[in-house]
Length: 442
Image (cartoon, rainbow, N blue to C red):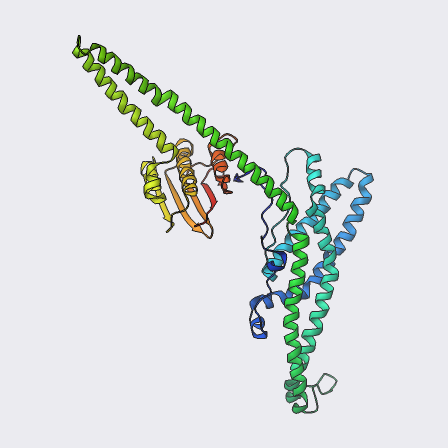
């Protein structure tokens, strides 16, 4: 299974953070740059075909919507409405993919997360999502918008190509099937019109870019993520992640307090008692005092070992002194199976990122040893833009899930404290792959 576990209420995929007018690629400047830009020629077929796509969806919706609404009086009406809505949402999702191929602009699906529960909650999710109705609005506007794009493109390209080809048609003396001569009276007479045709083709190139810009603006407004809804969802997400971070820190503090009280503190108390008893027996029974001193010495070493292990669990010294590569190498060397390690980071990330990356690898390898029955694993840490990406994979039996209160959920909450995302991909039968993306500013 695949699960994004940074937040159970994580909002829809984040839109481009740039202003809307800056998201649409205007392309290079100058006729030559526009003419040789592949995006121009990828947009041309769509501008010719968008009207027919709009007509197809308009025909389907003009039948499906009235029929499904009219059938509400009988029991089949509501399921038909649900199917119709899912159909036009599917059409909108397809349109986003087509626009990415044609215009090179990425519009993420803006839908709210589907809730659990019964049919009533599903209906509330489907009808209450504003993106559902914005999808319908876009599909209905696609026909008039596509018609405008089609006729403008047809007029400019056909007239420009016809005028530009005038000298060639005249020189070759082409005739129609009825014997009518095509072209002009002479080649010299057709040259000025060919120049006009070339100018029209230049206008057509810029018209392609302009219509692309306008179409993508509309698509971003109707098919993209609503800015205000996204900001509200992002605020809730950040508030929830901060709350989970505080809870995780409090849980960790209590664990450290418990380990100190039940472990090292008890051993140090026993050492103090042994030393007191040894001092009392030092004159009258030196041999017994010597045994008590030996016991106190052994207890002191055990307490030091426990404190060292506890400190390593908080923040290992090797991570502070030598960085992530050395700390992960130490983890890999202590793992019960063979671990292939790759750390491709030239600059040390901030301590918080290093710490989270270290504990993600540590906890994942620990879970692997306990549950996965794996024989080998791989750990990869690399930089991708402004993020540190940590991936841990094994060849075990799979089935790992991030349940509330579990180790993986704790790692997800730890990553969420810096707006990181943890994804668990662990189908039954394996393999298991855990990927964490941690925002980082060097």
